[in-house]
Length: 504
Image (cartoon, rainbow, N blue to C red; front, top):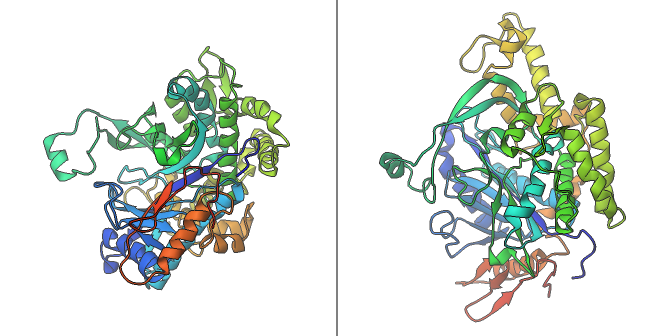
């Protein structure tokens, strides 16, 4: 299929957290029930008959859906995960992502578990210290030296885009320790420690009341391939099934699941344009961070909203200033497509708004909306007489100073419920109804995306084959992957070009 300027393939994988009432069984059992219901009862996809990975995705862990995406259970943590189809437009990526939410929520409803099971697209476990991924994938022109030369040109952007893409979090974590897992760790959690070079321990940090990012405290490297305990900004991926004509998958690990559609689209759209700048060799050499990982945490935790970043040459730049440099460079792409023009316009608008009054941006930025919800909760609880007790330890919120109130464990529950993927339960959903938020797609688009793939990528052809095999009767043999499909033992359909539809 013909490509235009700045045309790119992108997709997002989201790892879901699940809370389960004791009456419903174990979380592991529940996520299996959800997965099986989608494939065997709703018939929205084909379960994998083969093992995609003997450890992480054994046979029947999940499969491709008729909308072109994948739903599966990752054996590490036994969590439900949804990957969108390959997309070329911002509306498609947002609709595909929300369609994954709806598929899971519908399965829970049909299983009669609505009152017992909650699924979240948050990125942190406040009490356990775990963090969950929302990983972005971009098809990028790469040479062998990409991760040593070009990737550092992306770091200042990733470090600072959290000012509009961060989902916000109450409190913080400190990482400490390190070293190889001992024998007892390996025996108790063998899957967790495969391909792990070292581990760390996580402790609560009560010095920060609220920050922009849920993931910033957990990123310890710029690039890493073994990321179970080496979480990085980006992860090199050289798979053949997501590569084409010198382009490979850039796997961005430092990302979070935006509830706000506008923030979601702006995050993907701006990142795509910055990657175009890198491909075209247009990033000036002075645009480098001195210490990207330190800057990541400092921007996330800065309570003054100045968000300073130390550059490689020693200069101090504010995050907004850094973003404006990338925006200025990207203006050359204006007129390439409606998506590009929307991104450039809204990128400038959101930076202007953040510079003027960050806390007035709750209609389009998640961290602002969440902060407002948490502050409202603190105000409401503080007026109770007697004050309500906190969820776990610590003084009652109503009897605390403002500083103490921000460290009450009850706020972690408020933080979590912002990310409930069921709109009827989500605090974001309630905020959207009462305060208003900017949307990218209509509800009808999300409904359609549960069954229909993007019309202009290879997901369309793969979707047609999924439907064809679902309609078969009796024993079946098939193998699905992103870049090709074995429809039976004698016929294999190659789909190497993600820009083609391979539609029949």
